[in-house]
Image (cartoon, rainbow, N blue to C red; front, side):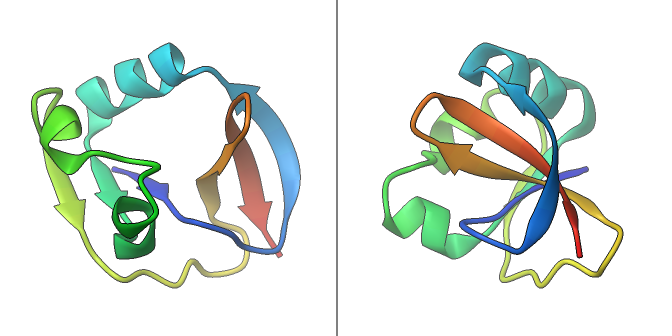
Length: 80
Protein backbone atom coordinates (compact mmCIF):
# COMPACT_ATOMS: atom_id res chain seq x y z
CA UNK A 1 0.00 0.00 0.00
CA UNK A 2 1.12 3.54 -0.67
CA UNK A 3 0.97 6.17 2.07
CA UNK A 4 -0.52 9.64 1.53
CA UNK A 5 0.39 12.18 4.22
CA UNK A 6 -0.21 15.94 4.54
CA UNK A 7 3.36 17.06 5.18
CA UNK A 8 6.63 15.55 6.31
CA UNK A 9 10.36 16.17 6.15
CA UNK A 10 11.90 14.29 3.30
CA UNK A 11 14.03 14.21 0.20
CA UNK A 12 12.06 14.61 -3.05
CA UNK A 13 12.27 11.48 -5.17
CA UNK A 14 9.83 12.50 -7.90
CA UNK A 15 6.47 13.99 -8.83
CA UNK A 16 3.22 12.38 -9.93
CA UNK A 17 0.07 13.67 -11.53
CA UNK A 18 -3.31 12.88 -10.00
CA UNK A 19 -3.93 10.29 -12.74
CA UNK A 20 -0.62 8.54 -12.05
CA UNK A 21 -1.38 8.38 -8.33
CA UNK A 22 -4.83 6.96 -9.07
CA UNK A 23 -3.20 4.18 -11.10
CA UNK A 24 -0.84 3.35 -8.22
CA UNK A 25 -3.71 3.30 -5.70
CA UNK A 26 -5.70 1.06 -8.04
CA UNK A 27 -2.84 -1.42 -8.15
CA UNK A 28 -1.55 -1.29 -4.55
CA UNK A 29 -4.20 0.37 -2.35
CA UNK A 30 -3.53 3.34 -0.06
CA UNK A 31 -3.31 4.48 3.53
CA UNK A 32 -4.58 8.06 3.77
CA UNK A 33 -3.83 10.39 6.69
CA UNK A 34 -7.12 11.82 8.10
CA UNK A 35 -5.88 15.40 7.75
CA UNK A 36 -5.83 15.01 3.95
CA UNK A 37 -9.52 14.16 4.08
CA UNK A 38 -10.31 17.07 6.44
CA UNK A 39 -8.43 19.57 4.25
CA UNK A 40 -10.09 18.34 1.06
CA UNK A 41 -6.99 16.95 -0.67
CA UNK A 42 -8.49 13.47 -0.88
CA UNK A 43 -12.04 12.15 -1.16
CA UNK A 44 -11.89 8.63 0.32
CA UNK A 45 -15.07 7.58 -1.51
CA UNK A 46 -13.42 8.37 -4.86
CA UNK A 47 -10.31 6.42 -3.90
CA UNK A 48 -12.31 3.45 -2.57
CA UNK A 49 -13.63 3.00 -6.10
CA UNK A 50 -10.03 2.37 -7.16
CA UNK A 51 -9.21 -0.28 -4.56
CA UNK A 52 -8.45 -0.79 -0.89
CA UNK A 53 -8.18 2.51 0.97
CA UNK A 54 -7.77 2.99 4.72
CA UNK A 55 -7.92 6.31 6.55
CA UNK A 56 -5.40 6.04 9.39
CA UNK A 57 -3.19 8.35 11.42
CA UNK A 58 0.31 7.36 10.27
CA UNK A 59 3.80 8.52 11.18
CA UNK A 60 6.19 7.38 8.46
CA UNK A 61 9.59 6.11 9.54
CA UNK A 62 12.90 7.35 8.14
CA UNK A 63 13.63 5.75 4.79
CA UNK A 64 9.99 5.13 3.88
CA UNK A 65 8.60 6.64 0.70
CA UNK A 66 5.36 8.62 1.00
CA UNK A 67 3.26 10.86 -1.22
CA UNK A 68 2.53 14.48 -0.26
CA UNK A 69 0.06 16.77 -2.09
CA UNK A 70 1.35 19.79 -3.99
CA UNK A 71 -0.41 22.45 -6.05
CA UNK A 72 0.43 20.59 -9.27
CA UNK A 73 0.03 16.95 -8.23
CA UNK A 74 1.80 14.74 -5.71
CA UNK A 75 5.42 14.74 -4.56
CA UNK A 76 7.10 11.44 -3.79
CA UNK A 77 9.35 11.85 -0.72
CA UNK A 78 11.81 9.61 1.10
CA UNK A 79 11.32 10.42 4.80
CA UNK A 80 14.41 11.61 6.69
